[in-house]
Length: 465
Image (cartoon, rainbow, N blue to C red; front, top):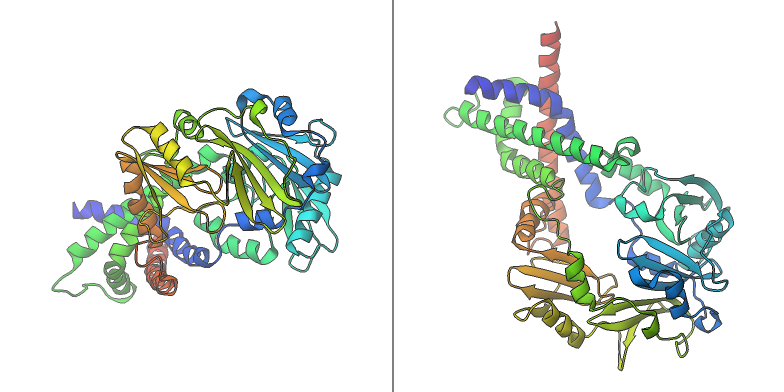
């Protein structure tokens, strides 16, 4: 058994010591610089204002033209100077419709440039010499699957000192992502390394998923073998080794709990439904929350909407049409029927709760909740609908199901998120303390991994000789 542990740990250690060091070092970078994303506040800030009274195509006409049977949500925004209806279908694909001509939107290079320029102006970004840099199906910053329904994307360079790039959907013309030179540079040292995210691999999701899953599993096996061997080799609380082996032994035992839980939880980040549920509601559950399909005959007109606005969205919630508006100042309102409030009301959530089951209840979530969930808009409420062992987190800003938590998914929250990011109640709210602990633990893991690199290199050289 000891011989087997020695062989497993030795050769898995040689194979993965650099990978361990890379994971710890890049993890520290990721704590400060996350992967590029267009946050909701940035998206709203970049929307150009428009006058809904000038729109010639009514919402119900747009919905009929966009296949009323399958549209879940309908939005009206300005793409450059062009008002555009954007429909989200039941399968989450999107379609765009010119609100002035009544035709399907054709996103040309000129329109993509206009959209990017308007976004930059609204957000106060310097756009000295905007130009189309590329039209890509994938590049390093658009490999996530969330961009699939908008591919290919126009990459627009603003020509400023920060080398800002805006990515524009070729389907809807809306800006989907922004990146800057410094952000991209740090992410090469952070997320790209940590997630093994080169474009050539990541654009093939299944291949990337399998590759990283097996690498993390083998790394976990190597760490387990090393921990067991380290305990066995410990004699009267002293290491029997000398030199680099002694440092590797001592640091390994000191960091063993963190290394094991961190590598194991990192492996679980690639679970994707293998051991735990995925946290997504089914179409039947979504329909019970929405109540019915979005029907053109029920859509209100644009008369009476205060001008100017940045976005208007129509969706169904609790069986009624909800119209969500975001005005020129970025403030949201959700007028619905005789109700007019900034967010979805508890009365509407109560109807949804009854639709999901007679025994279901709901609560308003608080920031310090052990199972946190974020709404799309700042300060918007999040409701938890509890149906036995299954919870639904509902965004009070737009009525979307943020996540579905059953017993398996709640266990996953602790096995992955808490262990991998130290997102424990009481610590998550103390961000400076959490940062210090993460840096100390990752530094210890990095030092331990580097001793393994030296030992592995020496063993490999001897073996080759």
